[in-house]
Amino acid sequence: MPRNAFRTLRLVAATSVMALSVSLGTGTAYAERPPVVDPGLLPAGGPAAPPTETEHPANAPCISTQTGGDGPTIPPAQRSLDLEHAWQFSRGAGQLVAVIDTGVAHHPRLPGLIPDGDYVAAGGDGTEDCDAHGTLVAGLIAASRVNGQGFAGVAPEARIMTIRQTSSQYQAKGAGHDKGPDDMPDGYGKISALASAVRRAADAGARVINISLVACPTTRPESREFGMLGAAVQYAATVKDAVIVASAGNTDSCQASNPGLDPLHPNRDLWDNVVSYVAPALWDDYVLSVGSVDSFGRPSEFTVPGPWVGVAAPGENIISLDPRDSGLTTAKFTKQGQRVPYSGTSFAAPYVAGVAALVRARFPELSAQDVIERIEATAHAPAEGWNPYIGYGAVDPVAALTAEVPNLLPPKSPSAAVSEQLPIPTPPPPPDHTARNVALIGTGVIGLLLALGWLASFPLRRKLGMRDDH
Image (cartoon, rainbow, N blue to C red; front, side):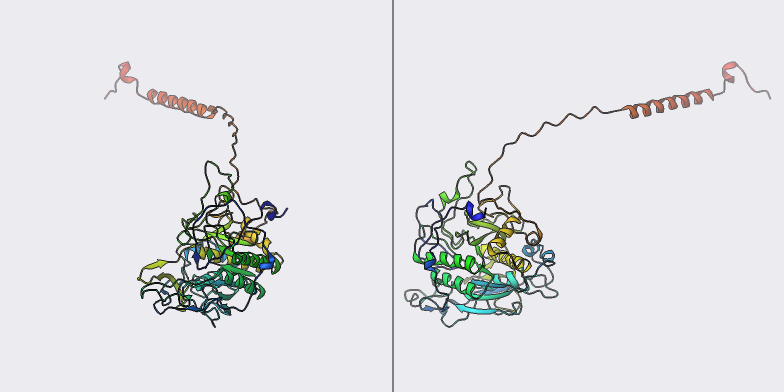
């Protein structure tokens, strides 16, 4: 029986502006699932242009980065994946990975970068990364290996195709008329454009599509634009056989977070308490959603939990390609000059997208759904088997490339607690001290004989009144 048989069909749709993680409104939770997707809402893949006119305000320069991370030291997040071992089996050769993000800048460690359009700036080709985000995502997926450099992408022989869909440094044209000189732009990114970008990437032959951005409305999504996005991910996954990997969302950008497991009711249906509808992650029949773990493998505090989360990957203190330089970067700076390390589920997702590229290169016969199930089945599972923070567990590239996987995954719900009476141990037999006793007795006898011999050696003459004559 396929995994989808365990899933109840779900509910979706709503209008919203999308950025890296934009949450909208407040409201009441509904115990409903994503809906049956309407293929009739599938958008066209082109032209790749902003749905409305946009502007880049003069007071919103592109984000500055901090260089660093170069050298032979392997970054901790990368080391935890044991990529040196995984590369013995696959390096992602022949795989095209689409990065739908803030753009991917040209970089010497992304050879063969394919520009495929810009839904933010008219006339753009997707290679401007004003937000210092998409280039890092692409680097985590497919940065080439360089002698003397510890950092490399998960699939260093894969190719990247860039489609810019969002930017925090742009806004709709005219939106700045009532803003002050220090006011930040509104940001720009439409869900309808994301839907078009997904279809565009799939039609261009992308075998893996990475979406490190979310929309997370707190009211039930019902708009036509969300319906278009649902149709696009279904089309890409089932018709074009693309593996779609998406971030699970961050609590600092989504207005609300979903509750985790209730220890008093561990088997309660988590869909009953959804308050943040994270898209496109919630279409988990077609999307592999990724949460974040820290350097110790613990769930990151910022991950938005949800019944759709599939797996997790490192997402804290990330090092990757610098969009402002030919090297690496460890942090960015806010407009006020504050240094901000790179962390978020946005950076956990590309690690998993890279693993998907490795698996597709090693097992070209596997369907997109098979690839997702292999990654989930070989992850380091939590005690519950699955939980809403890390899904089926932290991804394991080596296991995904080498392990025998089960034919059936359990549904996305924690395993029920089991009460089991352990057998009472059989009492151990009494210790046998025979050898010790024999040894002690023998030692005592020998000691006694020695003592008697020593006493017998004393001269008896004095006792008998005898003495020497001279």
